[in-house]
Image (cartoon, rainbow, N blue to C red):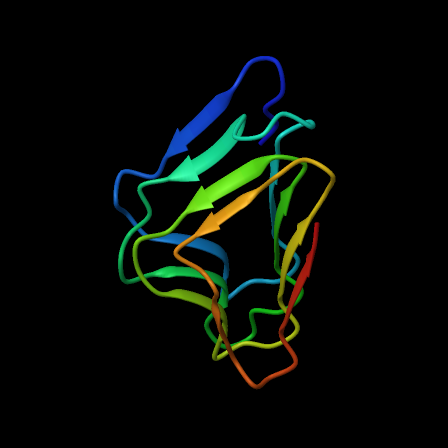
Length: 115
């Protein structure tokens, strides 16, 4: 999801948001194109927001970069009964991860953060 000069808002409508449910190599990118808050993911479910959920869910990735923003009111899980999933926050523009940090499973999942 790219923002930039024309902001993009994804309102999840309080339903589950999962990148990689019992699946492999899924990716969701919140890319603000250097404009803070121009790519926003909001109104996530308060119980199921995760990257890599369910047995066999590997190599799934959520990327928040260059001004992207994610607003999470509940539990965020990285690698729930799954392994080798990534949450990456990077870029030069400010970003937001309200409602974080995530719960990280002990199964080789990683959260990488560098502004």
